Image (tube, rainbow over the protein chains, first blue to last red):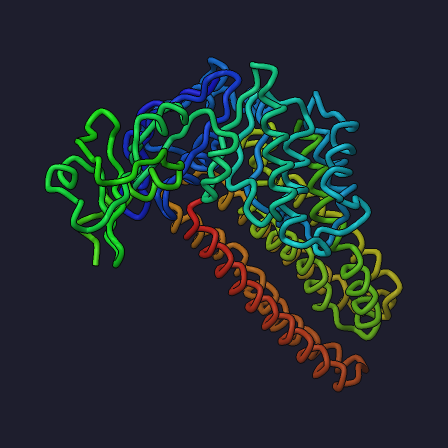
Length: 286
Length: 219
């Protein structure tokens, strides 16, 4: 569905993206995570041609994204956080204008989404809260039967109930096995709930690109007292965090030594991200 | 697709400016009747400039980018919308001039000269305003150059208006000799100076907005 190959982008003479390569397969939800400034938004902007990469190739639906921009964008739904344009206009007017561009615009879906999100389309954009602006952006992006959805922080600013509904909606969207979603997020619990695959970017380079279940199954979180932290475990661990009560370490299951004096548990996506981040930036630690 | 984009430009970006435009036209109508021909420049360009500002601000918000259109089409639509808008402004202001006192005094040979100057300034400013976003929106490699050039184009407005003011005042020395009240000239000079200052302020805003957008490295 989406293939990104060796994408490079320099901004202000520094690398923003370095050989970014990953794929979004058909019928999958791919979570794109990383710290602030890691390159998530730049990558997504490159996909929709808002930023022109210095090198690399982006293929969507088997077509070169830059060369077939119009055709490709007809089949993409894109939303980036809150809708912040045309603040003085009513939602109905914006949606009416937006709908003229998409051959497969479905007013019934738009109206249904507005009802789900509690959006009053007679309101002006400036009258909406931040969360409502996010919902409006999502409603626009989800109403033209796209085959690939690209969302930049789609759940930020949403209350937990609506966030849950949005994530459910994501699951429904991909249930046909053909539609895919690529979304960036800081809320790693969203990945735990819906992502099929996790792509982790750090400092402009892809660090992890793996199915979520495989990622979680292949790692173990080890907890224990300070005394139980052996040199072998410390050496094999991806990273170790010490506190006044003991330690927590993330270890690849295949490298797990004997840890009978410790407790082990399955990590969350957040645990994996935090520990990998700690390992990658250990030289910058306090 | 281009037609849709132009319609979108007018529905979403220009339409909200119509009310302030109508108010300004009303003010201008009053001032034009009082002989402040230079004020026409103010009204003619304030809206297109507001439009450019609005476009630059909204550019960063991805609305255009997510539409199934190319960057080139967006630039073309902005350019054509500006052409249509500028021409509509010029036509409206020309109509406003018709009932003015100056219109009836053109036997003295003053009004035609003012009209020529006004016409030239309108065309120059219109071109500058149209070129500015085109340069900015185009995919020029050297962004700083593009921003500087587009800002310079918008900055041409106060320069042109100021030039018209000075020439107009000189010309109107003749008008005083022909029985005009000198107080009107001071009023006109004040209004024109205020217009020029406003344009300068708009230019500064335009530059600040451009820089802000540039720093975010979008299109």
